[in-house]
Length: 346
Image (spheres, helix red, strand yellow):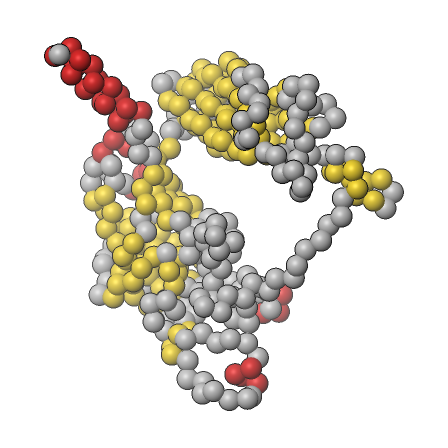
């Protein structure tokens, strides 16, 4: 009986170690302070918790912050031209909260990801400025927090979001930055995470299907933030998402040099790869794994086997005529003014 209990304890401990949490969700209640005169950096607002609270993901509009809409109902141009915001704010806003970094992340690199921030962000940990700033309207804003955080301790994370116009795009009518369709929100709409990543890891996997040769080319990028090259084992395995095919694993011994690097692999898709089209959208999943110096990094990517070509004035997919069609969407979201950030909404 004692041996059985001991064995069960070992299984539980090994399971908890193998399923180590590698992502910290920092969404929830934050504190916020509007900085309409842009004095926050000069006055050192970073590293402080503010008096007003709000939910992130969210916007200052959702929180009722900014200038209230004073338009009265009327059959006139300002009222009929487009939907107007209940609370308008274009300028700098500071968001701050306390977070705890897991102690077991001590040998990892820490990255902050902010999905759908508009337009420019800067980040501080406690009173230290994190290197760089991001200014994308579509892709996540990412910051390396490794030099600024101590695992097992609490830190105040401060994010400065500036939604003022940075570049003259489309004469004020671009859907990504206008109040005519979606609004010029201030805040963060999507996932907000701090991720723990291995110092030697897969950075990205790009897949290029080749139907004629029944193979897929994988362009695999690495990061090695240790001083020297490391021996590694790279493997790639592909399976059909519908469960009908499990293809042979391909393994490659290699050295991952310090810094950034990449390698190309040609993966054999077998004699009868399942082809993708819009009527039978059969997908494959590629699992790429890197093992180096006791560290394991894995990326999974879905793809379809399809070949796009032209023949005279015709477009072909997998040697069959392709007809493209679609709807005109103007990014109008009347309830929130912002695009949904969940699968159901999309």
